[in-house]
Length: 187
Image (cartoon, rainbow, N blue to C red; front, side, top):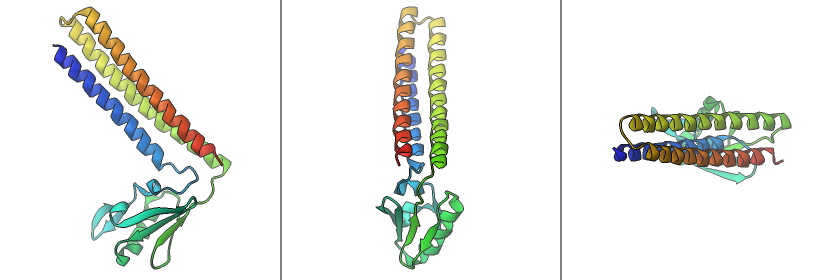
């Protein structure tokens, strides 16, 4: 019986880790005023009829804090890369010079910074909801097992363990959000 509780808690830990990793990935995509190749991680290019990640058809690099440079491995990919960036609707305008596609990152206004902070908090709230759902699932399972004959004092111990996991996860979420907010608001 205890193996099933162990596996449930292990699955819960995995869910918490995945939620936090997803949050970190999503926060990495939010533009904080500096050019970062991560900004284009969601862009898919039509590579001979197949939607392909931009990083698989070109080298994406930050030339400086305001410029991204995209060097395709095949010159014939310049136009499809440009079209894919426009189609991704991420608010960036690519410029094709025949060798590279360059993207100049405009400086953020104070209003835009506030919007981005609000967006990061929304993403963080979604992560916290995932944590609460994982907690609820684990707690329900432990309570069911206690009802089915698992020792009550062990059940309480497991519930405390679950609460500790969730508190640690929530703390990591808050740390990630604080770092991103600080990054966004730094002019």
